[in-house]
Image 1: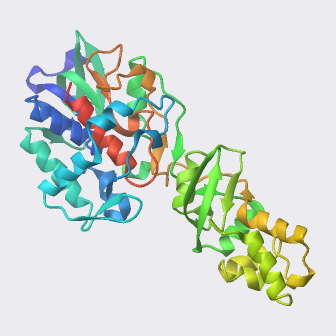
Image 2: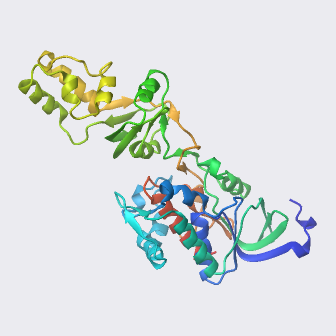
Length: 401
């Protein structure tokens, strides 16, 4: 980038430039502006908060009442504690209440707008402008550092700033404009990046297992799904590509390739004892009939080809019933992969937290350079947690930039 060739009349100077007009970037801009800092937020997108707008089915699951640092994934599980304690769900709810935005708890502490996600975006933009922040969109951006100042070119303008905040998110949902720009900037300044992979994403299958899933596409079953010493209790949903649904999205962030997942299709139900009782009470009843009282009939019908014999109960031994129970309570599946970043709600991994201050989000060896939100190696589960991390990390950086 040839800074010398820039027209001096086309230069601007700010205390803080934030690249990324999403959840974390807007929150950081609000806080920095409220401290009297001259703030510019720029984004390559044509709209502010594009991911906020599509979140929660258009209603924005903006936080979770059960937020706790121990639910987040990171190579350093302690990194997120300071920021999350400094800015809690109650703090964001207070902001939402001030703007008279009605909301409701859907389940498991998940808070959604009663209206649309647009209300959250409008609230953040209003707060940002009130704090004196300026927002620029449709910007092609390059970054350099000279003489302790950051030099940013945005289209044809040269911008100087004391602080630079990277808030462009991760690689998830590229059709909404996501790029790996933050990772490129981190590496440009010598910061390391942890392994990046899709998170909160549907799992895919191949061969006979895929055909099985296709035959049940649209069917949802309450389940407990386990993998890699983690488990989640929610619905699973069969699709034309494999299995999705909240429980699968959750476990996908813990699952690794070539490893199995285990599904309990009848949570909190003593199936073996029940089958033995039914065998005594209804010896002539078919096993499929008994099981269909507790699971969808089309699912049982599909399983009967391999797992559930269509035999009268009195013909089945204890060993047979134990085998059926294991297959339904510990159904082991080997996904072939995930649907990838296209449908992933988040990116796992990011800027290595070993490079950053947990209190300020500032790079340890590059004064004035900050990384916040999904760009950092901190990922929450489904249900508003990743927004809470965006608010909290943006707030933390906003106190220091």
